[in-house]
Image (tube, rainbow over all chains, first blue to last red; front, side, top):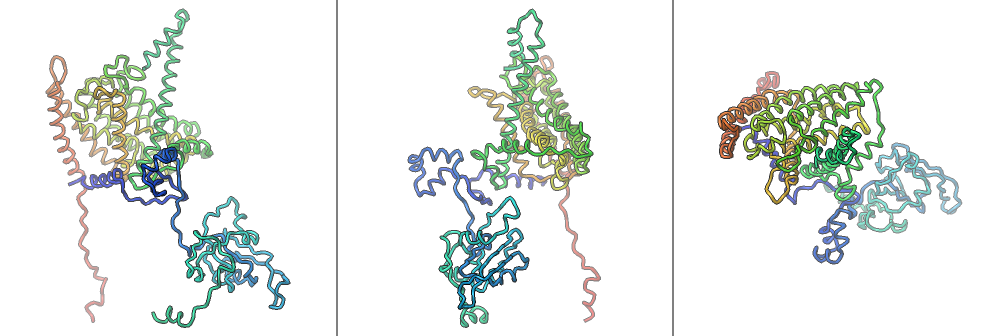
Length: 223
Length: 401
């Protein structure tokens, strides 16, 4: 019989149109509109109680004027922009610049006169990361022998000009220190979430310890 | 309020000695034209929002919801964006025609609304904007200009994809004009008049009940005429870039957009008048509300179909028009003509209500039979895959070991 498939298709779309609890595949970012019921549920009150308590707000919500922040949960190991760089740890060895496959990290160092007994630490004059070309592979972070450079976890650094995408030392120093957990097992062990908690200072960030022989055999040899 | 009352009102206020009837006529006409233009454009703007939201809901999306409550101001933002955009014209374009095409496409849609009878049932002063006794003919003629606008747009932009789109569009639109006109003939035969007012008055039993086949053919042909999704060959995005409006941008594209979204409104109002009894309804609710309700239902149906069915191929579309809809429309016309001849009172020319219900019963049965027969004749047989035969080359060394 012809036409059955057409009718079946119409039934599917009708179900989508009419049913309240249909499948939703949309996640709104950065905020979404919320109705009075959702607002009441957010403040853990009964809908009627909420409407009686805050009539103006519930009317606004009913008309669709109230929006709440909505973010998709982001993995703490997400590799993003805003590199977290701890200048206290950096020795200016330029391993990151050597390992960068795109050659977008530029480091110029000078004699600092600090810690002369230990063999004198380099002072960083220029530390440019051109994130307009960066592919966020994270090799610079892997290469850093002192855990001074960490991936960030942001992704909202859009600018109007290409030159603003080059992060210089001042911006690196001023950037919020929210290091991503990527290649930093010490953060992962502490369950640090870069998007949720406060910033990590350089002395709290901790060093990544080499796994003991037992741990290594446990991880790799006993497969 | 209609044109004649307004005209007489203004004429009586002007001094009679100066012979200013033309002025009264002009003022009345431009006032009403202004009114209709703005009302229809606003309704279309609202309709774009409605259509996008409903389509989104049907397809498990959200639709525009950022600007204003529920995204209601989205049409405003769209129009503003399109007006601010650069209005590019190709170097090789045929400039006068390039400028003319959007207007030609837009104006017929507006003109349809001028003859829709929106008054209360006896229609003392004719329809909304004048007493037109050839309303059906006017509508068919005016919507036929659509094809011209599309073709001019495709030709003037000197772009091969636009030209492809326009050629397909003209072929399709011309083919679907035929079944549409034939379906309307059934209505005209039964009402005995070409005036839309008389057609509404004649619908003691609405024509959807008495002529289901005609309604089916009309709605199919109309949705092809306004090139909506099952038949949107004209602007098949995946095949033609954007069809005839590839080269258009800025305010001209906005006009195309407007015309495209005005078409369903026009089609729904025409279908309401011709098949659903226009402003007829039960007493406590005024007729205009009934009209809007019926038109809304038709629009909802069109949207539902649009959201569900995929696009037909170009040869399938032409075949469907000529092999499917054309015989159905002819059959409907023949059926209605015979029935009117048989059941009509030879003296007064009227058909009683009981006889109309009898006609409705016959027509529903015959409609189902006709549609099934056409489907059986036209439908493709279920594709049978050939049984795979192993190639002699496939496993050459199989026997040797």
